[in-house]
Length: 172
Image (cartoon, rainbow, N blue to C red; front, side, top):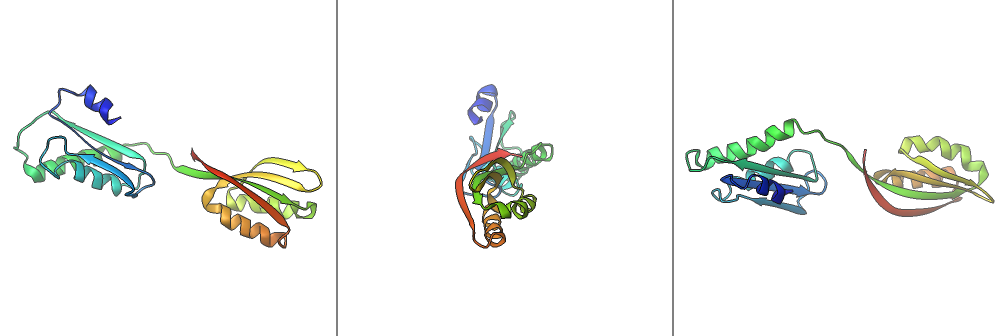
């Protein structure tokens, strides 16, 4: 992405950039570049705006054609951070939710109480199998898994088995 913009605007004086990989506010994977501007006048201010935007998995590139030092370092900081803020104000966003797949095995007498609990935990019933026992395959937000498992254990007096699969990410 950064290289694509830099190549597209290769004739620009500066293509400064910053990125945050991960959830909003995370600092595990970040990067920035002043791209020839005075140290700390472009990349760092852009990164600060991104980190405080409440948006994760984001990259920003600000292209500047006019060179020189007429703006001064303070002016550059305002220009680059302001450019990112202006873009963020019009950015369409999508909430990303990490989902887990949970298989639940229970007795027939627990079916109705369990089915009534699922909406409270945003659990989607993906498959039902009625054999010697009942098996429900559920998809639900990762953040709700522990609470649902505790509630199902309580509702079935401990007569429930769980199998948790690796979470999958999806934009909601």
